[in-house]
Image 1 (cartoon, helix red, strand yellow):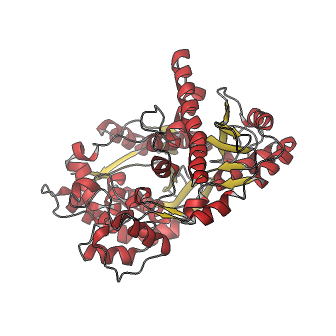
Image 2: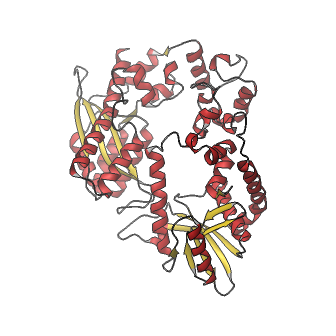
Amino acid sequence: MTISKTDYLVYRDCPKNAWLKKHRPDIYKKYPLSSFEKLIIQTGNEVEEVARELFPTGVLIHGRDEDAEEETAEYLEAKEETLFQPVFHKEGFLAAVDVLKLDEETGRYTICEIKASNDIDENIHYYDLAFQVNLLRMCGLDVGKMQLLYLNKDYVREGELEITKLFKIDDVTSEIEDLCEDVAEEMETALSYLSNKTEPKGPCSCIFKGRSGHCTTFDYSNPNIPEYSVHDISRIGLSKAKLRELIDGNIFELHNIPESMDFSEIQQNQIDAHVFDKITIDRESIREELEKLTFPLYFLDYETFPSAIPRFDGFSPYDHIPFQYSLHVLHSPDDKEPEHFEFLYSEKDDPSMALAEALQEDIGPTGSVIVWNKGFERGRNEEIAERIPEAKEFMDSVNARLYDLMDVFKKQFYVHKNFRGSTSIKKILPVLAPELSYKNLAIKEGGTASESWNKITTTKISKTEKNKIIKDLKTYCGLDSYAMYAIWRTLENL
């Protein structure tokens, strides 16, 4: 049995999931990666490739097999100054190091781990690095400095990409040294656990986490957990003691939750809606909310791409590139259907100016601009205003008129069991406008929309494929803005 640093990190998150990854890949890989997960992998590769430019003499080693191990050994013997992805394998542990630098005067090595993030996650990044340090020392290397290299969120691109300003390098030697002994013990425990050919019995450790924290194989390891369970209670993952009390009591169904247990108002409303099939509609509060709106009503939705490496001037790492919007406009209460406007930028340069100009043509000087989760649209508008000073007055005007339709549901003015405690438009829509659905769309969610736009602007594809993606993007974004109108109309009719 050989475990990689990835196996180790999976083990730390959920041991049984790691065991299934090693012994039952058919179960572990049952569900394909989502567009979002694929994008994370792609982003990591892109960031690592750019970061290597900081080490111009580095030599890249390809693969993770025995040939790569032999090539690594040859370069170490030859005292090569900088290696990318050297492979180390010893006593059941395997790792490829992002950057390994030799100090020829002291003979000591500096290990540098590249992260495609703009901050450090100590619970993951430190343990990742400590695993590698322990392995390198098993292989006889004298490791001195330990570094984490990550994106500088304060960097703003102006002209050519400045690699030395784009990244930060933190020396975390003392922090990693403090961890190494504990990590070494945990590595051995993990190796022993994963070497066992008998599948671990019982549920996996994720049973004590909220739904969003569940591992890949949760359903397999916990077959007695219903598809909608106590794990789905709003923000229950942040109430660890409460969730553990439920699980220790063998309580998984919302129907079985004791009345004596104390929950927040939002959590209790969710439970009551499910248990008693209770629909809460506060018509007076909804009326007061909707009376805040002034015609014409502009139902606006953006699609964006969060590029880790800033592509255009004025952008920082992970700033969102706004490439599309859909706008449904209801000019007066008497209009039976809204008028539709749309914008999609499919060229390779910055869409910001073109989007701002199109938006100024489509949105008038008065009227409420209705969005879902206004923090997102407001943030994009502020960024556009900062990058394009001539658009600032208009963008500020739009932000001053923003209304978040999600507030009706966040404030609990409408509670339905099928919302399942969520205020996502994809949970609300089937209840308030069941005639509309995302199910049959080629693009069903924002992660796929982002990945699709990135594909048509950064890769070589046929005109036919590009046109299809453009059509699918317009259909998806168009439904997002029309869905808001349909939900508003239903609320208005109440």
